[in-house]
Image (cartoon, rainbow, N blue to C red; front, side, top):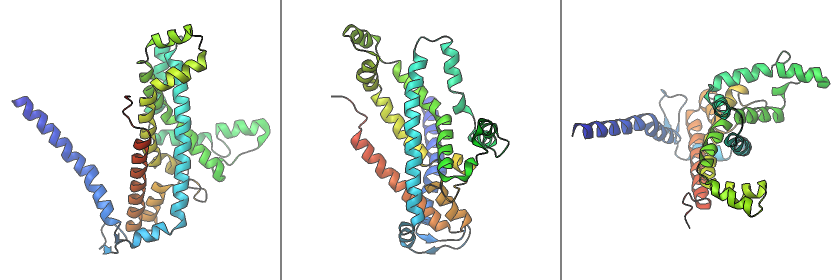
Length: 287
């Protein structure tokens, strides 16, 4: 009886903490999206849907949405492709396989702040190691963060480096459940390595792939820290996506209501995308 009370107590404590740190802030942000406020302590003015009309008519919003889709889509694509490749490599009979599996997860364990600082040091103009190497090859000193295209490529590359290990571990776990008899039967039938991957490995990994892509899409679309630490949304707003736009509206333009509106619309877009995703790729794969 005492054990049941402990379980229920911990359960309701978890619900209370979730409500305090997730549900209440989310509802408060939605409420703020219908108000005009210069700060969180100023007296808000109810404006209804005026903030939504302003945001949807703002070109910065649509540009930030487009950049967010490019950033998230590119990062997810490379994370999944590299994650499957690394998982298959780590699943093979390679020397020091356990050690290699441990090393593969290390980037995911590093704090984002440390990764961003190291990346900026390596790309520093003109003393960064990568900048010095490129200069030594005769390409001159490159201003990595001065070009919109290069800046976007950098944030995508660093994001792929950090979070590919998570994808790798997920796919590696999925590979453990694939029966060896399927590959043996395919070899007997004369299937080559590509055919075995396409007709056995990939279909067997479909449930894992569905979940991984969904999780990475949610996380990358909302990813704020790595872009803010690397570029601050620059240059010329080239890497500014919706989370950074919301931050800029709320804390640099001192329009908390507009910042909350951008965040709320971003949430609605992501919710709609998730519903469409589940419609197209249901988790239940039973016939």
